[in-house]
Length: 320
Image (cartoon, rainbow, N blue to C red; front, side, top):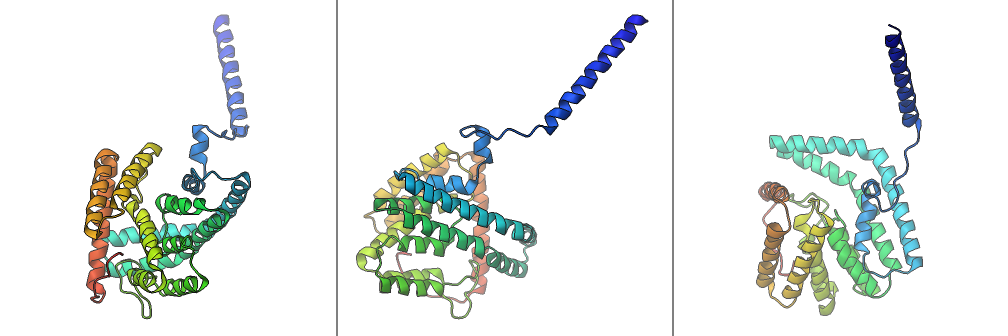
């Protein structure tokens, strides 16, 4: 009997000590993940990581790194402020859009898409401002390399923002810059697949005007080349790739762009189509391929719905 009482007291003491240790562990502040640990990478800012990839290989000076880090911190704070103010509204809109898409309610889709586009304008403007601020801190060949990598790495980036980023490295004269700015200001902000508002023009119309009426032939050639760099990776937008997959996809696309440099339009299409197929077959997983297929079907539905609503237009000029 005495032995049983001793054993019970011992067990009670052990339990009490365990409870105290657990309480202390809960109260202890969590150790901040150290740089280089997997926890630090997971906890990192995705936007900063995206821009770090876009700045790889630029051989930045210490002063440039400091200035760029300051720009990134300012941008992140502005994005955080926007998220606090509008995050719940964006989440609600996204849920309504999914419901409208599932029901096939085109009227609701148009209205909600317009609301979302308006809501997202501020963060998109913040991103474009950051792109141009970083570009202004770079020198010589760093500028074009950053633009090439940014067009591939920074997602999402609105089409007009891509065009402005490309124009910023073409050494335009003041009059050219002003004319291009006025042309882009007329681009429709209506969601893709819907007819432009009165007085607005489709993006492709604006691009052709910039290409043929504002740029010199050499500038127009570089303009098209850089825009193709961004479009080459567009089909992977929204697919989460590992670092190894990104490197493999970039190598395939770089080889395709080199091969397509002196090809005509039809040949370029074939070259890029084959490169994309190679990425699907050799780089992506089966789950990622299915994700791409679903996105392609969604884009196809949106395009078909828009084609029913917008007026018939003349085909866009070659080189879009």
